Length: 595
View 1 (tube, one colour):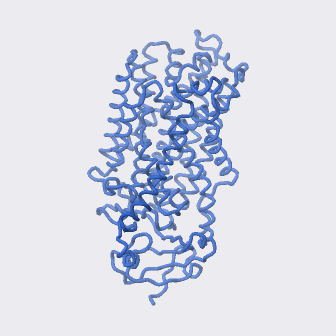
View 2 (cartoon, helix red, strand yellow; view 1 turned 90 degrees about the horizontal axis):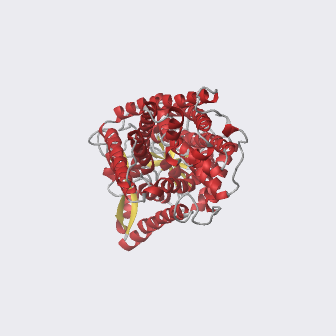
View 3 (cartoon, one colour; view 1 turned 90 degrees about the vertical axis):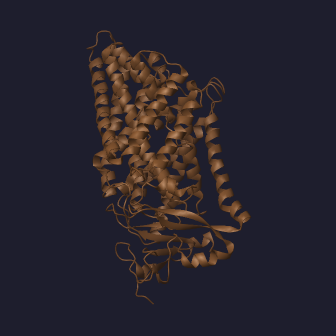
């Protein structure tokens, strides 16, 4: 059935027979053109939801447990947003914007971006409240055709960019800042690898305890930023004798403001980096009891806390450090502030230790969130060795995704030149993200339309259109402006090579994803004489359920399709009813009597 018929055909519901075999599907299938939706429910207290059948199945019982409470929701977001960004990028942002006034405006834009993005994610989570993995799920459901295209492309992209080298490098810089020595490139890389290895072992060995550790370090992080903020007020009050004019940077605050598009783009890229993490809690939705109310309340709290502390910390920085010195600080901006206020004594070292703990908490939060993203990709069946990505053995944690994160981070710490690694990696991760985030935001309108066609009630949360459009326009800006050359020519950007290299590499990654999709889904089946079909399998008794894409020989395709529904459930016999007559008030399908 052609894709165009989706827009004209009415939906029908396929319901399994009452006496179906125990291994057969126990969910309804609603057809709408060439799309098919399954009605499924998880054990996290969320409402039943319809999802397109090509997507990974809902795990009715989370094999990772339900350890994510309201406090963990807050600190999953806080720990990823407040990682190394507020301690490392303010100098780069000031250098890019040219003035203190514009830098503070950009930090405000970052807060608005985080709020808008959070609203987009929350609406999508309201449609699909029973699966973890955020973007994996939302892109899969927004763009179900061509079948498996977005799962495959997002999978390749996620595997290639599944590293956290920039944060590990900054953590290592603070280790040497505390020690009072200047490391060689390989000494810096060695400490970064060691720190990331320790963080990886923490999350691999125990799920619940690693969440507790992350929360504890998150409290330390909040206290650290509060201390910096209070110190800023003390400096502004004129109570630090060796800083005679704390208000100097705030007079003529817009003096030196740049008008170069590339500089402004670099500033926004770094702002996006510092707020990355506002959606981290959406990666563990299936581990949260009553996820939508919990996320709505506590996710909002996390963003407001971070936005307020970011602004106060920037004011503190600007009160204590001259504009010229601060613009040169790059990855150790907070260390420059500490030295300016406290000198190079024990107080400075103690505060640097707190920053180091903050960076370590960020590594934990990113590992936890991204492991669920990679695991959900594995559950879609689009990666080889499905069991490796999906299984939670032997420690009840997703070992496969954690190992991939460690391996890719190791490579990205060792391979790039140390001087350019931080800025290039930050930019490289942001550009493809902008492409997917743009698709994610536009796709909200597609989901709204399809849900309306299915006769579904309004979701628990719906973003205002003005917020959604604002988020879309910001993504367009993020994608467009980095192509503007810097003032000094094509080699005068933030790195020593061509200024737009990260844009080209980001686009090349997306193209690579598309090529991989065409070869795997179309070329290889044609050459091999088979078709790809999904199959649902249960890996263990802990609720681990996954798709596995299997090769079905052409001679057996008709038999396979008769024995399996679109989602991959085994079926015996079914009846068909119209959507309008078969849906109950809550959207659940009422099975008619067996024919």
